[in-house]
Image (cartoon, rainbow, N blue to C red; front, top):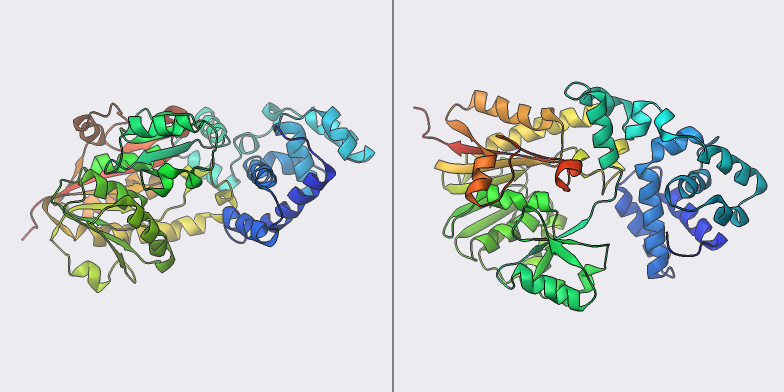
Length: 423
């Protein structure tokens, strides 16, 4: 933390925490509303508040365990003393004598002395799920890797620029970036510059996209004149990448059941210069717009709705907003969407199923159950598909990425090929 703290900063951050902590909606959305209600806050103030709020959410299990009463202010002070790099001498003038004494006691508490769930920052229900397929050491590794903030990755729009050109363009403006280790289109930035105001972003040469998500395009490997469906397109980041890989030829349908998300795609599509991408609002996976394409599609991408637990570096609030019940509901959706999306494929067509989760019940189990019920589909080897694209990444038949090993979000993908329909 580089800025000099004042009592006013503490009051602002406490007010923001009070708004966010019930977590009735996503934390980033609640924080955005807080900033809209407090328009006088400067850029540095907003950055400080966001860092504090997300830092507390990343370490909330430990903080709630060591404070006497968990209030926004007590959690804030405990976070500053334990995790922000501030020493007690800097904090003492800003707090009461009682608070200073309590902070000194709390600072002496070692993380290693805590139960596994507190060290890993996982709720009990998630710990139980992880123990079904991981030992305690692996769980701790995973938990610690998800407590670090995620880097900012960009994808270069190859219709408008090369990666080398963009890295040089950013460097001229004092923004340091380096090629991502796996994606040939990725740039990983140093720090968190306001990239959405940069000329390269506004002119469509770059998009913000985690490297894990970029790799889906290479697994799908659409050809120039293919018919492609992005089944759960959201705001279209992956659709835009597929359009560029196809050199703006062929046809991509970007399906989503949220008008708001598809509206967010429109300005991005305009900037991108692509002419082969067609956003389509659907009611659900059985919409007539989906059914009329049955058997006509070469490539289908299913980035399925999921728990999002692989994105805890960015969205630590998901630990409180997901539950065993919500995951059961998601599994039903995932099964239905995969089944419906698979009907679109021509014989010999390819489907990539992906989630930003590390739970086998949302990943391998969904895919294996689908293949068991649909024997005309065969599983392709993701490592082999990436090798064909000259990407040296081998996590086996399935692509399973983890922050500590790969520097990406926790991410899963499986690739399936459609055979001839059984008669």
